[in-house]
Length: 466
Ligand SMILES: Cc1cc2nc3c(=O)[nH]c(=O)nc-3n(C[C@H](O)[C@H](O)[C@H](O)COP(=O)(O)OP(=O)(O)OC[C@H]3O[C@@H](n4cnc5c(N)ncnc54)[C@H](O)[C@@H]3O)c2cc1C
Image 1: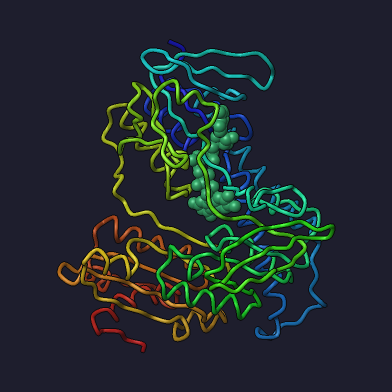
Image 2: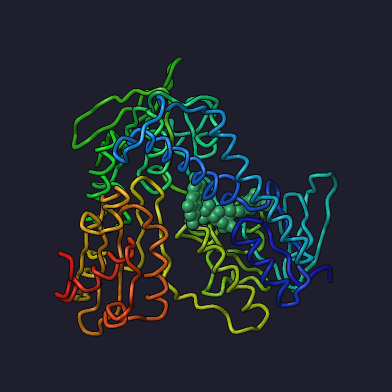
């Protein structure tokens, strides 16, 4: 037996699972075909946040007078903005390398596939340095992640030049003057926010009736207004019929409520969803069940094939780094026979646009659809002292409590720094807090978080500053 555990894919699902496995005394190897840290550290969560920070600072420079400040005409060096984002990604990628060495996890660079084996499938690795290596472990975890969905039949396929997926959108040679973003989920909205902050004319096309469709409807509506104030444009309920390329840009034919229109821009970003990396792994021969490009597992990540597990993006939504890591830790603890972390813990979701959006638990519509009666509280940042002092008064906090038990069932926020604040509600929901505990908690003053407190008070008619 070569290893206790082999993990395929070193994203936040795989590398975190490897660390936990090593802590539990499992002899562990991890196979990665591209870069340690996966999409998250190299092409997703981290480099986008670096870009967004540059965009946010640049945008703020245009409002210096609001703070009694002045500076020469703001400008940016696009190459340096991109270089900074790549450096940040590189630093974190090296950090994962350090963690693998620290925990004595063998990193094998190459592309893995599986064949029948016992007690788990055999892992065959086409190594980057050349040659195949065949390994047998007691357990194998697939953490191969996902990639951008494409629709080549209507031209929604990145060409690396005028049509981008998130990868090309992260490292272009020049900032586009005009851009069409197809899809208004978190990824589409973050790129739209970044390029708009740098001054591009940005049009976002969304097939559903509202932007950020997984968010609470009130947040979606407020987000659209806030983005429109910054000059973003939207076509909502609009179906893309075809994207075609011209010498200088792209033309996107859309249909909105039976009305045809052609949008034109220098570049387009395709952000229409995610497909799991399930190909060329030998899954079919092993009888692994795949549905809608994702591996079907039980709650511990087991695929039904002895010794084979799947976690993270490849095991299905929500496609979030922290969900991947949480599943990875759970799966390894289960394998090691340890009490495993709680998979029922609610998973927060964040969009790092300007303003930011963060949520956890049920939306009001989902609570109603599930037949739950809820008490709803709201509190706007425009009357929060810290928000006024910071000049960041957009947005609000909305909380939902079960009418019978007082349990916090959902929290939805839009505004400055709400992606940091959501953790307060994540903790409250994980500890099964009720309105009474949230109301009895002392929130520091002055903080944006006081709006969380006020929202919980408002749900019960006790709001103080409205
Ligand atoms: C632009 C963008 C922004 C994002 N922002 C956020 C965010 O702010 N917050 C958040 O939570 N999530 C965000 N995400 C999603 C997040 O990146 C993913 O949910 C997360 O990376 C999933 O982790 P994973 O470990 O399942 O897979 P991945 O990170 O995709 O890692 C899988 C790894 O497996 C490797 N691999 C695949 N097949 C093989 C093989 N056969 N052999 C060897 N190696 C293989 C791949 O090279 C890859 O490195 C973002 C995604 C994108 C694209």
